Length: 264
Image 1 (cartoon, one colour):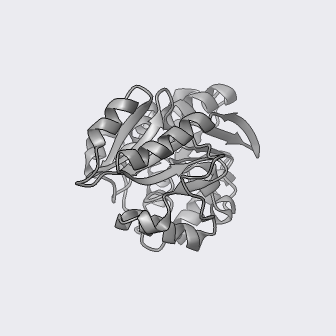
Image 2 (image 1 turned 90 degrees about the vertical axis):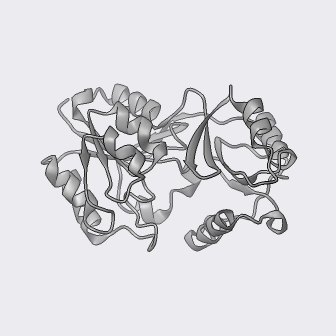
Image 3 (image 1 turned 60 degrees about the vertical axis):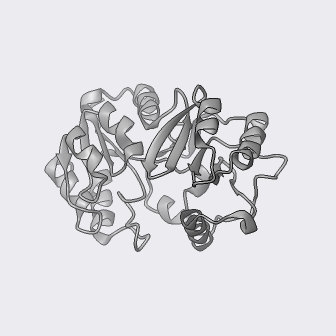
């Protein structure tokens, strides 16, 4: 198969993080990409429960979600791995025990601490955005049926981050996303493992793989594919690790990248 496959991060790559919309130039580029016979996949840290109807309206061929813990192709779920209820409940307890803030993310729901306990401005911002996008349910860490795939944590001066890290470092990869901001993904899973799974499933050679991202949680997929692209608005840490740097998301970054590789 000589088909090309392109993997797109969402936030800061497809979607402008200020407007929370996909720019018109990106819409055009995605349409042309598929018209030329290529495969377009989402590859995101978001769990599938955060894939909105707006994102699905662009008819991606498949979705790798939760940093490789969920894989979907042509509306069929090919792979899914959760942490299970027992570990999810323990994580929820330990978020409180170690005084951390954040969110526990699953295939069917997103869980936060009780709203009165949340002080971190970014967590409150996430809740507000989830409400706007229509998938905030109000589910909390106290839900007895909680079952998640991964989590995001924020530590403060009163947090025992080292205690939490030492307890879970053999279970999760701690991806540093910012100051005191970590994304935790089960060991053995990543955006790269998702790419490996789907390219093997579809028999697509590595030379035909492309990935576009902007953040440190994109590093695994950017380093795995043959053709790696960083958005102009990316975390500068990834610039030296990619094949090509395009313009920013709001300055035709996706369109320019796909044109650079003659995909459109």
